Length: 330
Image (cartoon, rainbow, N blue to C red; front, side, top):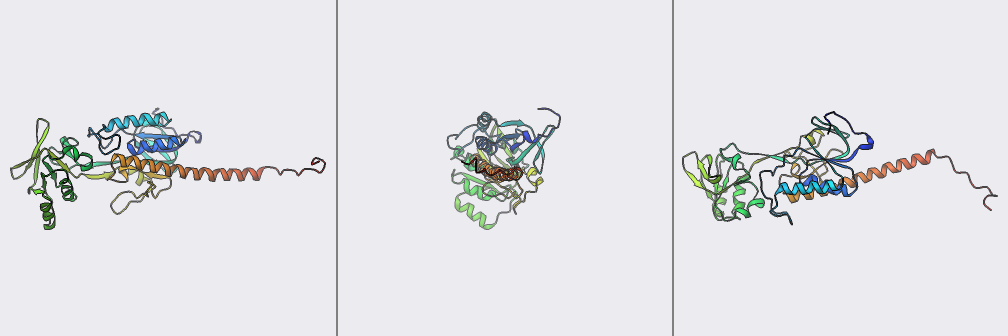
């Protein structure tokens, strides 16, 4: 790929440029390529689930390394002629001109943004080092693998209380660490009734020994042994490209989209965690497929409209056909 900035001509215009090559983006590219659309996928190579060694809950892919899934996916879409471009999209102009940082400008008829989200972790010693190992987030992704173990839940976000109530499903030994949260009487009652113990006090650090989590130490000086902990990170969508195109957001700060991922901006779709923080890998793949269906139908409508316009223009400029003479009709 040249370092010189260039813009594709109409002859080389992509039907769709997909930004983000996770499960959502690759599955969308697969469906679009099988619909005989010209597709480019641009990806910076920074998947959210990179720290995870396994992914769960994906039928026929349960326990697979997420990196291996993406490798297989890239090979599949490349086999259909999808162009895979490693790079960072700087911004997208309406129209659509997709500007790559330090690279060319791709021109497309439609864009799908599947750039995911980033997890903002609490500033507690040990958290970043254990993230994706024995400090986890999603019970549906990892709960079964740590079933019946001593589980700790760090109270760094308001949603952590419900997280602890949920995780009790996987283990009888769950301890909730309120940290700096001020629990209400109702919350304490619900935790107690569910069989979740409460360890009051500010968390000082995660105790790690021999590359394994051993417990949670409180500022008051005592620790609680735990072999695994869960935390609710602050999830921030990577939606700068979408907001730059004028996509509206809802009251929770996430870009609004319909069931197919279509946003409020013309020709712009969103799929995966950039649109839904709760989407698992299998969910994101389905969102990409739904978006691809909708995008292709939208392009077909435009193709038909253009064909009708061209047909009418051709009829208007064609000379009238002379009627047959009586002699020639015998």
